[in-house]
Image (cartoon, rainbow, N blue to C red; front, side):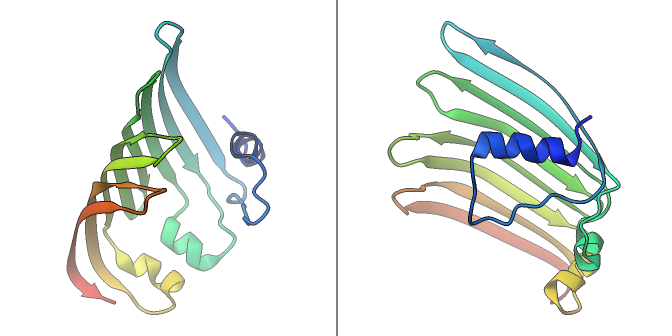
Length: 169
């Protein structure tokens, strides 16, 4: 188990100083991280599998609490071999009324920072997000994005789809 403060310290250590960002974690919560992985010397390689479960989340705002809920779980699986791309095999977040999942590859870190993969998100009850939107929402929504692009080049090829049911926006 890890406290929100310990998680914040870990993130600050990994990401460095973020002076422009207002980074705050949810209030009192029980956060559990469980994982496994390997580090290999020849050829240099890393694999990581990490499960996250957070309960009793308190976002400090009723609108955020309604939208994001009190519990969230997730999974990340990443693999890298020296000289190759980072393979994001699974990146999943599941909340009480929403879910998101991504898979992909990140390469050319020092030049174009290329990203390719898929992303999908689903909100089964949009009314939970009404407070954040500042107006009444309803129905359900499912979206997907597939493609590739270079972060530093600004070039991208994307295919997106959105499907809604009984939408009220």
